[in-house]
Amino acid sequence: MTTPTAPTTDSSAPTEAVATATPEPSQPGQAWRLAEDAPQLEEVDVIASQGIRDGIASQSKTAGSVVDTLDAWALSIGEMRVSLFDVLLIVGVIALVITGAWLAIRVSRSLLGRVTSFDSSQRLLAEKLSTMAIWGLAFFIGIDLLGIDLTALAFFGGAFGLAIGFGLQKTFGNLISGILLLMDKSIKPGDVISVTDQAGNESFGQIRKIGIRAISVITRDQTEYLIPNENLMINQVVNWSYSSRDVRVKAPVGVSYGCDLKLVEELLYQAVDETNRILSAPKPRVNLMGFGDSSVDFEIRFWIQDPEEGLANIRSDVFKRVWQLFKEHNIEIPFPQRDLNLRSNQQIDRLIDAMAAKK
Image (cartoon, rainbow, N blue to C red; front, side):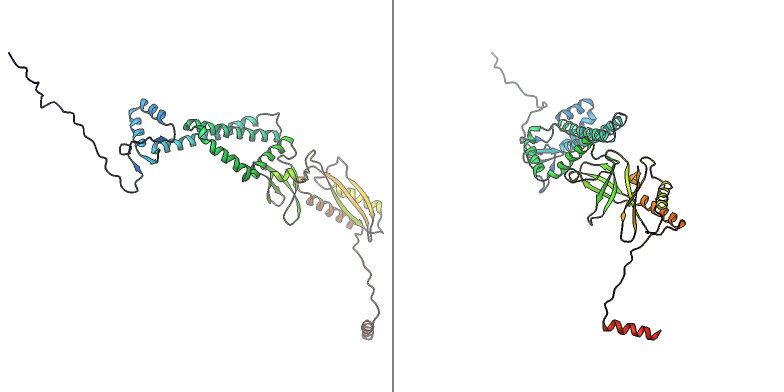
């Protein structure tokens, strides 16, 4: 009877040994470390990049190893873990979204420029609305690509709305005012309006651009004013080209009482007819305004169609031509004359006697 012997184990077979590897202590102040050395906590990724990592790894092993290497370098702050791959992915998505939005805005502007039924204000309004819609869509696309839960932004949305109500109310007020100005066409690019500086001097300027916050107005001396849109909504504005670009200019002229008034009137009409930029229709008009202290007062009224080219210069051209015609026909332009009466006293009498003695 044989006794069963215990099975012998081959010494050459590998034995499974349970060994616990003690991680090396990290250096003080070192925030970046390999994921293998990080403690096994319930870490939360900043973005949902696991699907992207798996997709890259399934396409190429080399690319997958590079992604794993980038993902191994991570920064752990509490339960939040941000890897180098996450940072690069965020930057790439933001750059992609901004580039796509910029290209979409250029395409939309090109398409709107081909619409012939829009005037300048309607085209500008459509461009601004399309730009706002594209940037809003780009924002939500970026949020979706990054895998951010919008419910997590509920608190920040409330804080942002509170900030709009207090700190950004002027900015959004100007934005809405600019849209309303373009909708009712009261102010549009190319219009000529009156601009008053801080010293109270009024000048004329042409609107070059209506922006989100303000409009850009450039005057004849190439000074550019930025006027908030809200000011144009609540203050009185003189728009010289609102319904028509025809602007009437007045030029006062005084002549001496001894002049032939009929000849003066003919010369004034001739001066207007020989000056450029003045329209023939509506016809110019010369009016006798009154009899002043030292002159007979006339006023020349004529029309121009390009107020952005200036009003003072066209009035100056008319005055120079009037001066030349008056010189040729001996028409006198009077100047104020005053009589000086001196009361008699001892000093005046002595002065008169001294002057008489010298003679």
